[in-house]
Image 1: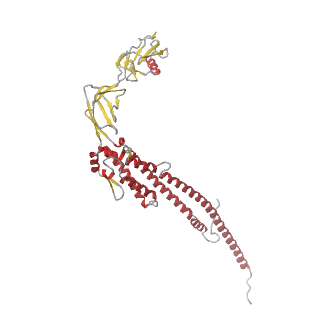
Image 2: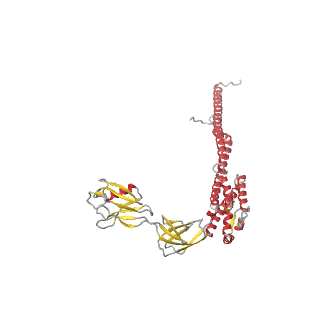
Image 3: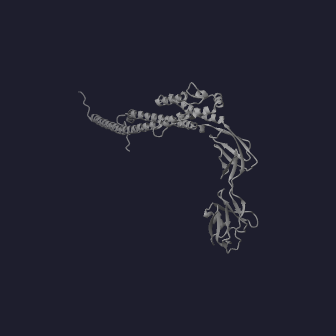
Length: 443
């Protein structure tokens, strides 16, 4: 890089002059960079709006079917024999449940042995019969220990699992067989082993296989698991069998849970309206997209709903519009509506008989607005990216021009300094010549 010393000949601060001139020349670039900042800020606003629209979509979809909006609460007369959880689709009513048997797999245990790893059993075959089907398992010098026999049974993958337990006695190690299914029995015959020093395992049954058995309102129901859903919408976990005890289950509408879901819908709506209002002070605050979204959402709120239910508008449920466009939920009025016609409230949001509910209308519109390809934000991002690329290219072109302009200015000032320097040198020479000339005096 060359070093320049401006103004040595002229005394002019040429460096400052060039710097100020280049600032003026950069005005177009400064405007373009301000445009970039505007586009970035505007896109950020639409990104935040997109997030709020998606959040509202989630809340609308959470109550656009009767199963999702309907909430049920279950009251049990006892939790000793079973515990119950009610889902949204639980049928309202009263049920009598008796737990006759719990589901359990068969378990067989062998006699005890001193060493679980010693190869002290004979070789040959053991026969494992599962659900009436006999299966031969080979035992040789590599696996004729208690651990080896357990591994051979597990490797055979016949629906029976083998393990070794330690009971703490003098001969602590026992082979334990457990059936994988509660509906299949098994037996182990080890008489096919010969030549060993230990007595072949003899299995004793400690637990028989059986399905869970409950009686619901006089109907016998069987299950391979102690987690039973014999009643639609009710998940029952069987805890204890007692054929003499009956548990009464009362399933009723959970109005508090339903109210909470509706309140979440209201809150998500208000977040969008408030965000749009907050954009009014920004340069993009009057964007038509903001006005359009607000208008459409408000339209859904007040449009009467078709159908045969008791309610046709959200205002009947306690939705009240405020001066700033947000809505509040009159809890007393909603509670009265839920008490008076719970199904009618559900149908207003979720629809009925092929008629789309209000929640589905909101959801359908919001899905279009937040679509990853054709949604509002996707369109604005595509346009913004195009503008940013165009501005970037213009800035690059202008920067190249400015670089040439600065070089030209420096060359011109340098030439001026050279010219003045030459003139100064000539002047000095002439002055020296004049000073050396004899003085002519008038006689």
